[in-house]
Length: 138
Length: 138
DNA sequence: TTATATATTTGCAATGGTTTCAGAAATGAA
DNA sequence: TTCATTTCTGAAACCATTGCAAATATATAA
Image 1 (spheres, rainbow over the protein chains, first blue to last red):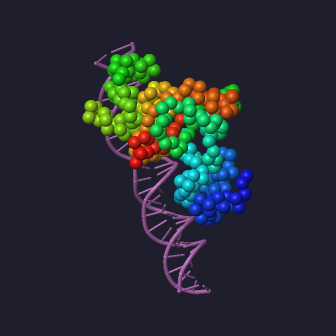
Image 2: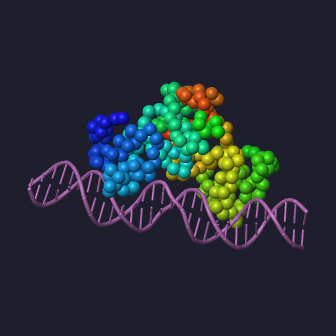
Image 3: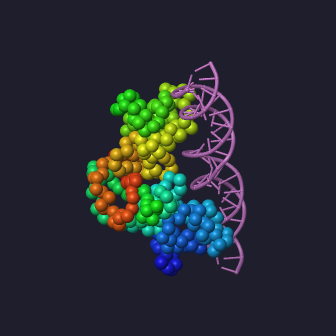
Protein backbone atom coordinates (compact mmCIF):
# COMPACT_ATOMS: atom_id res chain seq x y z
CA UNK A 1 0.00 0.00 0.00
CA UNK A 2 1.33 3.37 -1.04
CA UNK A 3 0.13 6.42 0.87
CA UNK A 4 -1.97 9.13 -0.69
CA UNK A 5 0.76 11.68 -0.05
CA UNK A 6 3.25 9.68 -2.08
CA UNK A 7 0.81 9.12 -4.88
CA UNK A 8 -0.04 12.81 -4.91
CA UNK A 9 3.60 13.70 -5.30
CA UNK A 10 4.01 11.17 -8.08
CA UNK A 11 1.16 12.71 -10.01
CA UNK A 12 2.57 16.20 -9.56
CA UNK A 13 5.99 15.07 -10.72
CA UNK A 14 4.38 13.65 -13.85
CA UNK A 15 2.82 17.05 -14.49
CA UNK A 16 -0.68 15.91 -13.61
CA UNK A 17 -2.68 18.02 -11.21
CA UNK A 18 -3.86 15.77 -8.39
CA UNK A 19 -7.57 16.40 -8.27
CA UNK A 20 -9.73 14.44 -5.87
CA UNK A 21 -10.95 12.12 -8.62
CA UNK A 22 -7.54 11.56 -10.13
CA UNK A 23 -5.97 10.78 -6.79
CA UNK A 24 -8.73 8.34 -5.87
CA UNK A 25 -8.47 6.54 -9.22
CA UNK A 26 -4.68 6.44 -9.05
CA UNK A 27 -4.77 5.06 -5.51
CA UNK A 28 -7.28 2.42 -6.44
CA UNK A 29 -5.38 1.11 -9.46
CA UNK A 30 -2.00 1.29 -7.77
CA UNK A 31 -3.05 -0.53 -4.63
CA UNK A 32 -5.22 -3.10 -6.31
CA UNK A 33 -3.78 -6.55 -6.78
CA UNK A 34 -6.58 -7.25 -9.20
CA UNK A 35 -6.47 -5.82 -12.69
CA UNK A 36 -9.57 -3.65 -12.75
CA UNK A 37 -11.46 -2.51 -15.80
CA UNK A 38 -12.69 1.07 -16.09
CA UNK A 39 -16.12 -0.17 -15.08
CA UNK A 40 -14.75 -1.83 -11.94
CA UNK A 41 -12.86 1.31 -10.94
CA UNK A 42 -16.02 3.33 -11.42
CA UNK A 43 -18.14 0.96 -9.33
CA UNK A 44 -15.54 0.86 -6.56
CA UNK A 45 -15.22 4.63 -6.21
CA UNK A 46 -18.82 5.46 -6.92
CA UNK A 47 -19.81 5.56 -3.25
CA UNK A 48 -16.78 7.48 -2.04
CA UNK A 49 -17.07 10.03 -4.84
CA UNK A 50 -20.76 10.39 -5.39
CA UNK A 51 -20.53 12.56 -8.46
CA UNK A 52 -17.87 10.52 -10.28
CA UNK A 53 -18.71 9.83 -13.90
CA UNK A 54 -17.64 6.89 -16.00
CA UNK A 55 -16.28 9.30 -18.58
CA UNK A 56 -13.89 10.74 -16.02
CA UNK A 57 -12.66 7.27 -15.18
CA UNK A 58 -11.95 6.53 -18.84
CA UNK A 59 -10.27 9.91 -19.39
CA UNK A 60 -8.18 9.65 -16.26
CA UNK A 61 -7.00 6.11 -16.88
CA UNK A 62 -5.98 7.12 -20.38
CA UNK A 63 -4.14 10.11 -18.95
CA UNK A 64 -2.21 7.86 -16.58
CA UNK A 65 -1.38 5.36 -19.30
CA UNK A 66 -0.06 8.10 -21.58
CA UNK A 67 2.05 9.41 -18.72
CA UNK A 68 3.45 5.93 -18.12
CA UNK A 69 2.09 5.76 -14.59
CA UNK A 70 0.01 2.65 -15.17
CA UNK A 71 -0.35 0.23 -18.04
CA UNK A 72 -3.30 -1.03 -20.01
CA UNK A 73 -3.71 -4.73 -20.65
CA UNK A 74 -5.52 -6.23 -23.59
CA UNK A 75 -4.89 -9.86 -22.73
CA UNK A 76 -8.57 -10.57 -23.25
CA UNK A 77 -9.88 -8.94 -26.38
CA UNK A 78 -13.34 -8.48 -24.92
CA UNK A 79 -12.26 -5.93 -22.33
CA UNK A 80 -9.42 -3.66 -21.33
CA UNK A 81 -8.03 -3.65 -17.84
CA UNK A 82 -5.39 -1.70 -16.01
CA UNK A 83 -2.33 -2.54 -13.97
CA UNK A 84 -0.79 -0.12 -11.50
CA UNK A 85 2.49 -2.00 -11.66
CA UNK A 86 4.58 -0.91 -14.63
CA UNK A 87 7.53 -3.14 -13.89
CA UNK A 88 8.49 -5.86 -16.34
CA UNK A 89 6.20 -8.81 -15.80
CA UNK A 90 4.09 -11.30 -17.69
CA UNK A 91 0.33 -11.71 -17.37
CA UNK A 92 -1.55 -14.96 -17.21
CA UNK A 93 -5.28 -15.24 -17.84
CA UNK A 94 -7.17 -18.30 -16.66
CA UNK A 95 -9.59 -19.44 -19.33
CA UNK A 96 -11.96 -20.83 -16.73
CA UNK A 97 -12.11 -18.44 -13.78
CA UNK A 98 -10.99 -15.36 -15.67
CA UNK A 99 -8.41 -14.39 -13.06
CA UNK A 100 -5.35 -12.48 -14.23
CA UNK A 101 -2.08 -13.26 -12.46
CA UNK A 102 1.36 -11.62 -12.59
CA UNK A 103 4.66 -13.41 -13.13
CA UNK A 104 8.17 -11.99 -13.08
CA UNK A 105 10.30 -12.06 -16.21
CA UNK A 106 14.08 -12.16 -16.36
CA UNK A 107 15.49 -8.89 -17.62
CA UNK A 108 17.13 -10.21 -20.75
CA UNK A 109 14.16 -12.19 -21.98
CA UNK A 110 14.14 -10.24 -25.24
CA UNK A 111 17.32 -12.12 -26.14
CA UNK A 112 15.02 -15.05 -26.83
CA UNK A 113 13.52 -13.17 -29.76
CA UNK A 114 15.43 -13.40 -33.03
CA UNK A 115 16.11 -10.53 -35.39
CA UNK A 116 15.22 -7.53 -33.27
CA UNK A 117 18.32 -5.63 -34.42
CA UNK A 118 17.50 -2.13 -35.62
CA UNK A 119 14.17 -2.05 -33.81
CA UNK A 120 13.46 0.55 -31.17
CA UNK A 121 11.28 -1.18 -28.60
CA UNK A 122 9.20 0.96 -26.29
CA UNK A 123 6.86 -1.61 -24.85
CA UNK A 124 6.75 -5.38 -24.42
CA UNK A 125 3.83 -7.47 -23.20
CA UNK A 126 3.85 -11.20 -22.64
CA UNK A 127 0.36 -12.62 -22.41
CA UNK A 128 -0.17 -16.21 -21.32
CA UNK A 129 -3.45 -18.08 -21.28
CA UNK A 130 -4.48 -21.44 -19.94
CA UNK A 131 -5.70 -22.83 -16.64
CA UNK A 132 -4.60 -21.74 -13.20
CA UNK A 133 -3.67 -24.42 -10.61
CA UNK A 134 -7.13 -24.35 -9.01
CA UNK A 135 -9.02 -24.66 -12.27
CA UNK A 136 -6.58 -27.17 -13.73
CA UNK A 137 -7.32 -29.76 -11.05
CA UNK A 138 -11.03 -29.89 -11.72
CA UNK B 1 1.91 -20.23 -50.91
CA UNK B 2 -0.15 -23.24 -49.99
CA UNK B 3 -2.43 -24.75 -52.63
CA UNK B 4 -6.19 -24.73 -52.38
CA UNK B 5 -6.25 -28.51 -52.38
CA UNK B 6 -4.06 -28.66 -49.29
CA UNK B 7 -6.06 -26.00 -47.54
CA UNK B 8 -9.25 -27.82 -48.39
CA UNK B 9 -7.95 -30.99 -46.83
CA UNK B 10 -6.83 -29.12 -43.74
CA UNK B 11 -10.30 -27.70 -43.26
CA UNK B 12 -11.87 -31.12 -43.69
CA UNK B 13 -9.50 -32.66 -41.21
CA UNK B 14 -10.49 -29.99 -38.70
CA UNK B 15 -14.12 -30.99 -39.21
CA UNK B 16 -15.00 -27.83 -41.12
CA UNK B 17 -16.89 -28.17 -44.35
CA UNK B 18 -14.86 -26.38 -47.04
CA UNK B 19 -17.41 -24.09 -48.60
CA UNK B 20 -16.36 -21.66 -51.30
CA UNK B 21 -16.35 -18.74 -48.86
CA UNK B 22 -14.48 -20.57 -46.14
CA UNK B 23 -11.84 -21.81 -48.51
CA UNK B 24 -11.31 -18.35 -49.97
CA UNK B 25 -11.04 -16.76 -46.53
CA UNK B 26 -8.72 -19.49 -45.30
CA UNK B 27 -6.51 -19.15 -48.35
CA UNK B 28 -6.33 -15.40 -48.01
CA UNK B 29 -5.34 -15.38 -44.34
CA UNK B 30 -2.91 -18.27 -44.69
CA UNK B 31 -1.08 -16.85 -47.68
CA UNK B 32 -1.04 -13.25 -46.51
CA UNK B 33 2.18 -11.94 -45.04
CA UNK B 34 0.23 -9.00 -43.72
CA UNK B 35 -1.99 -9.41 -40.70
CA UNK B 36 -5.40 -8.59 -42.11
CA UNK B 37 -8.42 -7.44 -40.16
CA UNK B 38 -11.86 -8.87 -40.90
CA UNK B 39 -12.57 -5.71 -42.86
CA UNK B 40 -9.45 -6.16 -45.01
CA UNK B 41 -10.32 -9.78 -45.74
CA UNK B 42 -13.80 -8.70 -46.75
CA UNK B 43 -12.52 -5.96 -49.08
CA UNK B 44 -10.00 -8.30 -50.66
CA UNK B 45 -12.47 -11.08 -51.45
CA UNK B 46 -15.40 -8.86 -52.22
CA UNK B 47 -14.77 -8.88 -55.97
CA UNK B 48 -13.98 -12.56 -56.29
CA UNK B 49 -17.00 -13.55 -54.22
CA UNK B 50 -19.59 -10.99 -55.11
CA UNK B 51 -22.14 -12.02 -52.54
CA UNK B 52 -19.81 -12.32 -49.57
CA UNK B 53 -21.01 -10.54 -46.46
CA UNK B 54 -18.94 -9.05 -43.68
CA UNK B 55 -20.86 -11.19 -41.21
CA UNK B 56 -19.68 -14.33 -42.94
CA UNK B 57 -16.11 -13.11 -42.71
CA UNK B 58 -16.44 -12.52 -38.97
CA UNK B 59 -18.15 -15.86 -38.40
CA UNK B 60 -15.66 -17.75 -40.48
CA UNK B 61 -12.59 -16.18 -38.91
CA UNK B 62 -13.98 -16.96 -35.47
CA UNK B 63 -14.61 -20.52 -36.59
CA UNK B 64 -10.99 -20.87 -37.72
CA UNK B 65 -9.62 -19.36 -34.53
CA UNK B 66 -11.70 -21.71 -32.38
CA UNK B 67 -10.43 -24.63 -34.45
CA UNK B 68 -6.84 -23.47 -33.94
CA UNK B 69 -6.26 -23.00 -37.67
CA UNK B 70 -5.36 -19.32 -37.42
CA UNK B 71 -4.79 -16.95 -34.52
CA UNK B 72 -6.27 -13.62 -33.58
CA UNK B 73 -3.98 -10.79 -32.55
CA UNK B 74 -4.95 -8.00 -30.21
CA UNK B 75 -1.62 -6.22 -30.20
CA UNK B 76 -3.43 -2.97 -30.91
CA UNK B 77 -6.53 -2.64 -28.79
CA UNK B 78 -8.31 -0.58 -31.40
CA UNK B 79 -8.64 -3.44 -33.86
CA UNK B 80 -8.31 -7.19 -34.16
CA UNK B 81 -6.31 -8.82 -36.87
CA UNK B 82 -5.57 -12.35 -37.91
CA UNK B 83 -2.48 -14.40 -38.55
CA UNK B 84 -2.49 -17.57 -40.62
CA UNK B 85 0.77 -18.67 -39.05
CA UNK B 86 0.13 -20.40 -35.72
CA UNK B 87 3.77 -21.21 -35.03
CA UNK B 88 5.48 -19.71 -32.02
CA UNK B 89 6.49 -16.17 -32.88
CA UNK B 90 6.44 -12.66 -31.49
CA UNK B 91 4.64 -9.70 -33.04
CA UNK B 92 5.98 -6.19 -33.31
CA UNK B 93 3.81 -3.17 -34.00
CA UNK B 94 5.37 0.04 -35.26
CA UNK B 95 3.85 3.00 -33.46
CA UNK B 96 4.37 5.22 -36.48
CA UNK B 97 3.59 3.28 -39.64
CA UNK B 98 1.32 0.72 -38.01
CA UNK B 99 3.01 -2.22 -39.66
CA UNK B 100 3.00 -5.54 -37.81
CA UNK B 101 6.09 -7.71 -38.17
CA UNK B 102 6.85 -11.29 -37.10
CA UNK B 103 9.89 -12.45 -35.16
CA UNK B 104 10.93 -15.94 -34.23
CA UNK B 105 11.17 -16.95 -30.58
CA UNK B 106 13.40 -19.63 -29.13
CA UNK B 107 11.43 -22.62 -27.98
CA UNK B 108 12.29 -22.45 -24.31
CA UNK B 109 11.56 -18.77 -23.86
CA UNK B 110 8.99 -19.53 -21.19
CA UNK B 111 11.92 -20.46 -18.96
CA UNK B 112 12.45 -16.71 -18.65
CA UNK B 113 9.18 -16.41 -16.75
CA UNK B 114 9.35 -17.15 -13.04
CA UNK B 115 6.83 -19.17 -11.07
CA UNK B 116 4.83 -20.84 -13.81
CA UNK B 117 4.84 -24.19 -11.99
CA UNK B 118 1.37 -25.69 -11.72
CA UNK B 119 0.01 -23.61 -14.58
CA UNK B 120 -1.39 -25.23 -17.69
CA UNK B 121 -0.49 -22.91 -20.54
CA UNK B 122 -2.48 -23.18 -23.74
CA UNK B 123 -1.46 -19.99 -25.47
CA UNK B 124 1.37 -17.46 -25.31
CA UNK B 125 1.61 -14.12 -27.10
CA UNK B 126 4.53 -11.75 -27.03
CA UNK B 127 3.60 -8.29 -28.23
CA UNK B 128 6.30 -5.72 -28.84
CA UNK B 129 5.76 -2.07 -29.73
CA UNK B 130 8.09 0.68 -30.80
CA UNK B 131 9.55 1.95 -34.04
CA UNK B 132 10.60 -0.13 -37.01
CA UNK B 133 14.00 0.55 -38.65
CA UNK B 134 12.49 2.79 -41.34
CA UNK B 135 10.48 4.90 -38.93
CA UNK B 136 13.22 4.99 -36.32
CA UNK B 137 15.63 6.86 -38.62
CA UNK B 138 13.30 9.77 -39.27
C1' DT C 1 -10.97 40.22 -2.09
C1' DT C 2 -12.99 39.98 -6.91
C1' DA C 3 -12.46 39.18 -11.72
C1' DT C 4 -10.59 36.46 -15.28
C1' DA C 5 -8.53 32.63 -17.37
C1' DT C 6 -7.50 27.86 -17.34
C1' DA C 7 -8.14 23.14 -16.10
C1' DT C 8 -11.16 19.51 -14.83
C1' DT C 9 -15.35 17.00 -14.47
C1' DT C 10 -19.83 15.75 -15.81
C1' DG C 11 -23.93 13.85 -18.39
C1' DC C 12 -25.57 12.57 -22.41
C1' DA C 13 -25.44 11.47 -27.11
C1' DA C 14 -22.98 9.39 -30.76
C1' DT C 15 -19.71 6.22 -32.60
C1' DG C 16 -18.23 2.05 -34.69
C1' DG C 17 -16.49 -2.54 -34.52
C1' DT C 18 -18.58 -6.73 -33.49
C1' DT C 19 -22.26 -9.97 -32.64
C1' DT C 20 -26.83 -11.66 -32.98
C1' DC C 21 -30.98 -12.84 -35.31
C1' DA C 22 -34.32 -14.91 -38.39
C1' DG C 23 -35.04 -16.07 -42.85
C1' DA C 24 -33.08 -17.65 -47.38
C1' DA C 25 -30.12 -20.53 -49.89
C1' DA C 26 -27.20 -24.35 -50.46
C1' DT C 27 -25.77 -28.86 -49.36
C1' DG C 28 -25.90 -33.74 -48.21
C1' DA C 29 -28.41 -38.00 -47.08
C1' DA C 30 -31.95 -41.25 -47.97
C1' DT D 1 -37.03 -36.14 -55.28
C1' DT D 2 -37.79 -34.91 -50.40
C1' DC D 3 -36.25 -33.76 -45.95
C1' DA D 4 -33.03 -32.30 -42.53
C1' DT D 5 -28.98 -29.90 -41.66
C1' DT D 6 -25.65 -26.57 -42.49
C1' DT D 7 -24.26 -22.27 -44.24
C1' DC D 8 -24.90 -17.60 -45.76
C1' DT D 9 -26.94 -13.11 -45.73
C1' DG D 10 -28.57 -8.31 -44.51
C1' DA D 11 -30.37 -5.81 -41.07
C1' DA D 12 -30.70 -4.74 -36.50
C1' DA D 13 -28.91 -4.82 -31.87
C1' DC D 14 -25.19 -4.45 -28.71
C1' DC D 15 -22.09 -2.12 -25.75
C1' DA D 16 -17.57 -0.40 -24.41
C1' DT D 17 -15.63 3.74 -25.50
C1' DT D 18 -15.38 8.49 -27.02
C1' DG D 19 -16.84 13.34 -28.29
C1' DC D 20 -18.92 17.25 -27.05
C1' DA D 21 -20.51 21.22 -24.66
C1' DA D 22 -21.99 22.86 -20.36
C1' DA D 23 -20.94 23.10 -15.46
C1' DT D 24 -17.69 23.23 -11.86
C1' DA D 25 -13.35 23.83 -9.63
C1' DT D 26 -8.80 25.79 -9.35
C1' DA D 27 -5.15 29.07 -10.27
C1' DT D 28 -3.59 33.65 -11.44
C1' DA D 29 -3.93 38.64 -11.83
C1' DA D 30 -5.48 42.95 -10.42
